[in-house]
Image 1 (cartoon, helix red, strand yellow):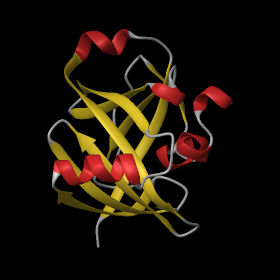
Image 2: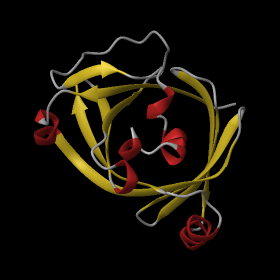
Image 3: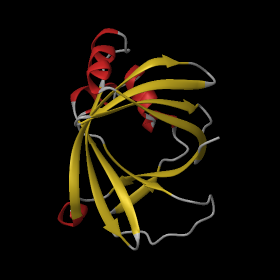
Image 4: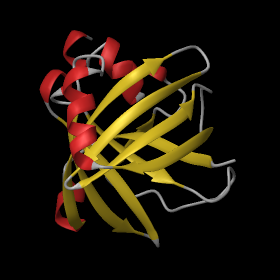
Length: 155
C-alpha cells in the first residue's frame, strides 16, 4: 500500500518565485470521484499517469500511481474526465532541505496558488519559509478533486 503524507499551505507573497528551480505544466482530470476515493489522469509534459487516491480528509492518505501512455491520457482527459480540467503550473522550490511544490492554477481556478510539501512521517518537522501562509491541509476546498466540482472562480 502506498501512503501520501502531504501538507498544503496558502502563500502570503511571491518571494518563493526567486527560489524556483524548475517548473512544469500539468493538466489533470478526474474519471471518478466517490466518497471513498478518486481516480485521476495527469499529463505532465510527455509523462502521464493514472492515480487512485483515498478521500480521507487530512494530511495522510492512501495513494497509488501508475504510468500510462501520454496519448491515452490526452484522449481520456478530452473524452472521459469531468470538466473543467485542472490546469496548473507546478514550481519546485528548495527550502530547508525540502522540495516544495507550488501549484499556480489556471483556467477555472485561476488566482489560486497553493504550496505542498510531501513528508516521510506524519510528525516530521520542517522549517517554515517566510512566504508560507495559512495551512489548509484539512480544508477539502483546496483538494484538486474538489476544485473540479467547485472551482476557485466560484468561491
